[in-house]
Structures are given as C-alpha cells and as structure tokens.
Image (tube, rainbow, N blue to C red; front, side, top):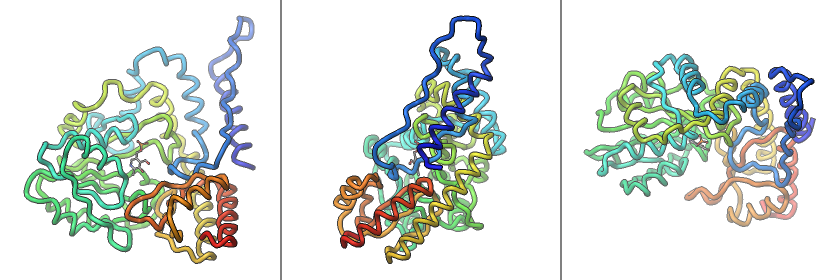
Amino acid sequence: MERRQFLGTSLALGAGSALLTTGCAPSRAQPAATPVPAVPTGPIRLNSNENPLGLSPAARDALLRDLSEANRYPRQSRTDLIAALAAKHGVLPEQVQLGAGSTEILQMVVQSTAADATIVIAEPTFEDVNRYAVTARRRVVAVPLRPDGSHDLERMRAAVGSGPALVFICNPNNPTGTLTSCDEVDAWMQREQERVLFVVDEAYFEFAEDPGYRSAVSWAITRPNVVVVRTFSKIYGMAGMRLGYAIAQTPTCERLRALACGNNANELALAAGLAALADSGFQQRTLSVNRASRQILTRALDQLGLSYLPSHTNFVMHRIPGEVATYNTRMRDAGFLVGRAFPPMLTYSRVSLGVPDEMERFTRTLRDFRERAWV
Ligand SMILES: Cc1ncc(COP(=O)(O)O)c(C=O)c1O
C-alpha cells in the first residue's frame, strides 16, 4: 500500500474509533464530523529524521479523546506521563523532566551551566547545543569526529579544561548515524569530576541494534553530573507535537526544572505520548520499516559506489560528489527534500529513511542522477 493511501486509511480509522470510544449519541444535534486531516502533498520529506508512518493509531485515538481537555491546563496527564516514564526507566518521577521537545531540555542544560563553562561538542553533531551556547555566550569547543564517525573522547576530554564544563555526547550521533563506544563513554564518566556535566542525547536510542550499545540512564541515576535526553519525535512519531524529556538525579532535574517554561508540554502531546509509549506494536512496525528502507537505500548506494557511514538510526549519511546545495536543488526538483549541509562534511548528504516505497523512488532518482553524471 502506498504511504499516502496508508495514511489516509489510518487517519480515517483513527477518527472513526475516536467517535466510537467517546460514545457518540445519535439523538442530539451533532457537531460536524471531525474532518480527516489533509494528506500531505508536495515533495517527499527525507530531511528531518521524522517517523514516516505518522502518529501511532493508539496515540491518535488518545489525542482525539483528549480534545475535550484542550481548554484545561495540563495536570493529570503530566503526572501520568511522568509516572509512565519513571516506570519505564526505573527512576523516581522527580528524576524525569519534560520538555517541549528534547531541544528544550538541551536549552535548559546549556543555561544551567556557569557563565565561564566550556561546552565541548563533537563536529558535526546535532546543532542545537551549539546554538544555545552561542546565545548564552558560553565558550564552545568543537572536536572533529574520528574517521569512523565516533566521538573523539580523548580529544574532547583534553578540551574540557580545568573549570566547569558541559560535554555533549550524541549517541547515536546526528547527522552521521554513528555510535560511540559505550565502554569508552562509561570509562570517562566513571573517573570524571562533578564539575563536568555529561549530556547524553539518545534521540535515536531505539534504532540502534548494536549489541555493545546501551543507554547511559544507569549513570544518570547514580551520578549527579549525567543527564540523558530522549525524545518522542522519532520512534514515537510525534515530531510535530513537541515532547521530550530528561532523566537525571533529583537535584540535577530540579536545576533543569527551574529553567523550563511553565506548562511546557501541552495537554494533547501528553495524552498522545502516554498512548504512544504503550503502543509497542507501532514501535516494532517503525523498526521493521526502517530496516527494510535502510536495506533498499544501502543496496543502491553500494551499487552506485557511493560510500556511506554505518547507520544506527533512521537516516544515512552518504557521499555525494560536488556541492550539497546543487544536489539538494536537483533533489527538490525531482520531488525529494534531503538533509541540509553539515559542515565540515560538505561532500555528504544526510537522507532520512522514509517508507520502502519512498526509498525505492528515491533510489530510482539516484540512479537517474548517475545517468546524468550528477552523482
Ligand atoms: C540528536 C537529536 N537531539 C535532539 C533533537 C531534537 O528533537 P526534538 O526537539 O524534536 O525532541 C533532534 C532532532 O532531530 C536530534 O536529532
């Protein structure tokens, strides 16, 4: 089934089941039926590492049911989601801090640092920490990734200096999709002083299937200087709803909380998030679609001789000859949005994995580009 057809059908089903669960009585004047949201048109969006399956059916139903609470400030739903996250990670509710997307957590951690703190990041990595650090006038040291795409922890450690510091470790890393050895990260955390705050961004945690990969949550529970950041934007398919969270020790969480916007997670996102967490079928479907799509893409890249970094995520960073800007314009003309430029990797393109049909079309376009000598 085509993605558009799939989405249209499931949206209609989602709206229908919400009507059933809210017990629609036929005798009273009914408001007009909930319109089925328009199916997106335009280019295929392979540029922001979103979940191509849309919202999970359970989350969609929960959201529609919760519309009657949209005029209220979030209360119970916030408590419920925090309790569910605490149970999932084996922590106390006060060790969970919500954000309007995980990017708000990243903003909080940067703002929580001392004015003279050094912020150490990899290059390239997810840009928001650098952006917030520049706004907050913190000193940033960017350490190039190793050739295999892992964080160069030795050089990052050397960059920390003797004062307060924040070390940002994005694992798996965006935009490269690569892993950094958890053993190495653990060894550093174990011996580092508390003046160094580790922020481990696990936005793509669920996609990483390497047996050596594990979460840093156990460190966040045992050390005051470790914050783990997670998002509902990827495996849970909720990028547009803005929901993320941090796991950290209670005093660390309290410091972050002081910097959060009041009521920062909205009622509908909370309701959808709670349902999405429990919808393991949707998470499994996302992973199997992601695997199938990655295989379609990497097979084509292999055939075309375009090298790529090993992806542990829902995107692949692959070689392109020539400039990113020209390539992106040509891709846009062909009906695809692909990732922006990620300096210094200016001869690479990051393409997010859509559904298999989208990847078949994308790879046909790549082959067509080869015939024109564009790749
Ligand atoms: C590594 C990483 N961290 C954080 C984010 C921010 O996600 P959000 O604010 O949607 O939770 C992203 C978004 O793409 C990301 O790739």
